[in-house]
Image (cartoon, rainbow, N blue to C red):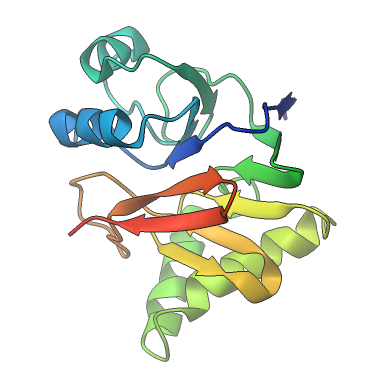
Length: 189
């Protein structure tokens, strides 16, 4: 796995977008989010380009800021890294797509079963598993892959949601902002 570290300036705002599944998304909606949020950095947290090339996506996105691409399991192009360690506002974040340790079919079946008990259990266990598997207790953890948009303060982990129009087990439309306040989860209706 490729690992990259990045340290930002003290006033930087970071936009985390996950599971866009381009072209199965509303690119105008994503372009509006990037314009409205006006981040210093955009992190694409995997499963971004699933059937067309990255240049076409970037041309349509029209972002005027730095982009770091963390590779997901369905991406048709190479990302910049598999795991990103980010330092911003004296806080450390570890970002990865989250597909690295699971058989997706088994993961889906287990999540489907656990959702019947409580919808928060699968994304919570997903966070807890990666917290333990990575043996990393010092950093905030941000994961893609699940399409859930949840932040669990008690274990300092968030699932970054989706902007895809493809129906999935979770269809929590939204994204994450990292800034001086910490992690902010933004839901799209």
